[in-house]
Length: 516
Image 1 (cartoon, rainbow, N blue to C red):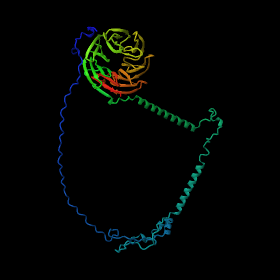
Image 2: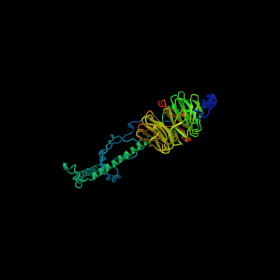
Image 3: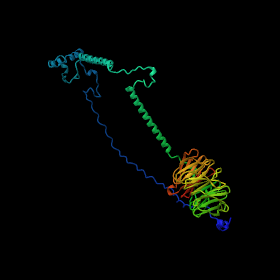
Image 4: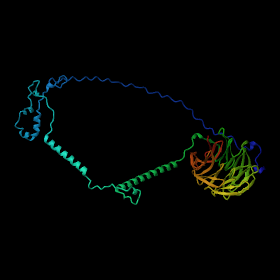
């Protein structure tokens, strides 16, 4: 490797070191907490009790000596004598009521009963003369009673006759004798009667009600399907603050590398979640790739490829490359997409020499190496992914996937693509080149990985992490991560040791999601 490839950097680890241990800024200590003051309770003032003079009881009321109903007196049936009434005379009085009115002025033997009794001051004043007990039986007038009873019986008999004979002459006979052999014959069937029309109307009404109920149930089902899927449990997520902006991330079980849009690089220890190194490497970094021995960055604005040694925290190599974007390891070489040059190249990692190159007919963004189906590149402006032969480095086929593909991921038997401008992800069969299905995930998906039967998508403009069933494309969960309102949001995503690592653009942080 020549001096130009190294960028004429001075020798010595100390001089070349660009990464420093990252320590989060100290927060000012909180003011001491003053002990709470005990507020004495106000003294209780006893209320003055004013004794009121007792109210003397009312004087006793003297009972009337001559009052038979007074409390001190006694009342007996002998104090009041009743006069007997002859029942026959009462009955006769009803029969000759009109004559009694005429003869009332003449008086009779009983007229004295209604006259007042003079008060002579004796104990029996006002009492009635001795008489037999009163007969309280009430006798109804005989003639009016008999006449009313006859009228009532006559009305009942008339109603009975009308009930038995009413409507028999005018009601048509609706009973139709049918031949059993003609029951199933629609031609010889008798015409429907008015009752049949009513039954048809009722059936039509019931059918309309059933159809309305079915439509209502279908609407409820559609509403349930349109509800957003649930979010992940908050205990699965952890946010780690880094020293610079975070846009893309690449993870290994032993180390995680995060790069920001302005060239900041941070290294995270997954065991402790601590940022072990941090520094400004480039002016405008785009992608990052973590290998077992190096960290690779694509510096788009300076047209460079950078290799960082994580053991010494130094820039080990700088290579010129026009407008680099996506980067992928393929065997002992690396494959880089030139967004400005509209080609994909194989590069020697030791010298930076371009070994092979192919024009893809558009602006490539991400490149991926499939273990069995060659190299694939996402072409942003044509809406395609192209397959590149690993040996000849020629394009084998093109597959249209959607508008603005920026992220591509190779699973064991499938390919997955994130279409940023279309808001979708697609699953592609790499053997046949057929799109299996397309899933709408929200505004601005950027990258995705497929693990544990799910496709995990960073939806940048929506500010969320979306989980999709890799078998049928159904949405499983949507977890808001934030940042979209400030022009950022989740962008890069990587997977290692059953853990998702998500770079949060504009927030200087990385979200860790443990899938255990």
